[in-house]
Image 1 (cartoon, helix red, strand yellow):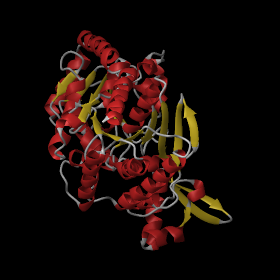
Image 2 (image 1 turned 90 degrees about the vertical axis):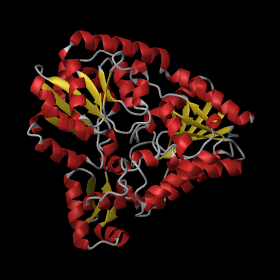
Image 3 (image 1 turned 135 degrees about the vertical axis):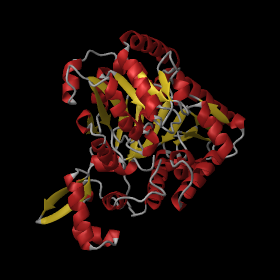
Length: 388
Length: 85
């Protein structure tokens, strides 16, 4: 099949989980001999077009700007649409696949002028991210998400909780939605690392326990609860040190919060970490905590499971489907400091238990969450969308 | 959770505007006057926000033909985009 995938983030433009998802899926589809074209946005230093392991990547220059974010998204959608129009002179696409509302406008437009079926993957919803619709921008985004789901022939979600959410919120018929989980590239984690030197790079000393957080620093990720739980954790495990990777608009608030705990010296903000360094850091951690309060899937938990680090995760959304409590990780109550500290201490205090969780998790990841399996299932959705 | 409905710190609001108007690389960098025009902010407010954002590594200054120009860095781009995904 000839696939045209539209996404606003694709490596090296990495914001959240959509970039690694699109990269993993596109590469796996290319391995299955599909012709995959990814149309995305430019990023400093990235080439305008390149071949990434068989995937044709086309980066769109945004030639116009506007102070309003929403207007800016309309503008870049226009330029993406133009890029697809140019490509379609040479390639007769079979399917258009969009990811989240940010590329909805371009995708819907391409669907109509190319007369090709549209598949959309809903990674998260505005009503979930913002925990309600509290502003005109939120209503607008919510409307675009509904429109995207309405126009799509098939809608893909990555977890059953997300399926339930969009079925109810957008009144979508159940049989229009396919649940296909995210996946992880296990091979990335099969490498030798010098654990001590990696930990030293992030200010963690040999006698300390590395408690790791990976994610955008925004409220939905629940990192504030992990910071608040640290004083309780260190009562039992004084050697615990929290390393927070990532950036986001809550960063300065969280830095202030960390100082106010009286344990500022045990909390390190290390900012955005490149993919290869992140793999090493994850493999060096003693526990990975995913304290999200809203998480449609939770790819970070899956990456932790693949890397051989015990995972403590909030019992919400897709996380509770990815992590099996007391078997492949520990589920805790999101936002509950006592529960979070209990989970972290449980893992840090019992190496045998922790090792057992790691082995079970690795096995589960290998069996279920491979990109090749996800690509096969996605290709079936494409076929179905083309058939009807 | 997006920023919608929350009050945004002024420097972040400014960073978003700088990003959305397209000042995202050296070639697309803008002068203080151009930024003031685009953002419709007082020059003093623009200056103080730029200063703050340079210190936090979200904005970079470059000088060509004696004119200072400013653009959002890669970290700054990620910071802005984190609000809407």
